[in-house]
Length: 409
Image 1: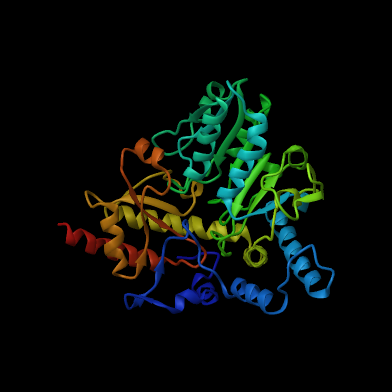
Image 2: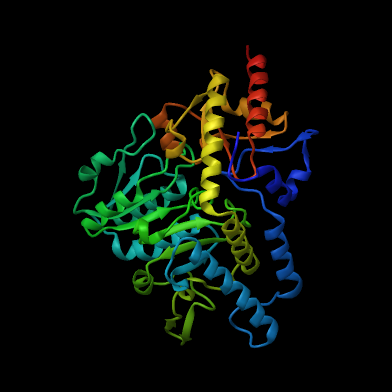
């Protein structure tokens, strides 16, 4: 099987693969939860702590200036990664969840009112559902959910029924963390903008795997995390249109986000710093910038082609092993995240048994309980593939599944 990336060589960049799992070769198939980290990212963060560590923006001594340069270079890289026209539209957060909550507390509280509607989809991760539930309860707004069909695709043919003059926000994932579905965000954004609504894109699952351009998507807001794309935990990005960020109130109050402070009032710093109160996760942001650069060297088109090949091979092998796969059947319409069930074997039992063979997969509701109910299952097993996975990893999984069937025969 020919793939555009030499995953076996790339594995040498990731020190975790020098370890064993239950005495066996580690087969890591849980990158949808978090990816492994290459030497290039780990070494960059170590170098920051060893030779650049200081607080950013505030010091005028050389070490602080070096720290600030590294931090802001990461912001430039994160902007470039999603096609943002300016670094001013990039707010560093602790991850996608915090980025979405930032929009909820600032733009949402100022713009969503009683009688308004927020449109989500049936496949949303809890991080792009619970914040809007809380906002709706607080404001009196109504949540609506664009359905999916039985193949795991959005019913975009129903957009005219779901996007109305009451719609103020549409928030949706670019790629489902359960079904792998790649959603037609631009089509939905066009519908949202036609009624004056804003478009928020949860790109946590998509950013590691797809080339993204916020301008082509016509996103008003877009959020993604470092830890799913070879970077550290505790780092993420909120992209926002500059005019929207300028108009939004601050999220947190404290140092750095202010311009002037008086006993009874304050004025705010320029964007994006208005939203970055206190000492940020500096090393994590620098590590995120290094992760972006690592993926840019590989090329996101090559990353995507690699995963299409892996999805095609894995779906065929899993079906041959007797697994039922959820989501689109065409690998070109989905990411390489594959949720499945294996007969009557509970997904938790599947994950426990394959772990004994050194294979790491996920089992559960994957922070998408409404979607599980729509699928009619309490949980699924999930294998998710990334740049360091090979067809041999799929074979290891299917061999382990045969042992599952033997256990429960």
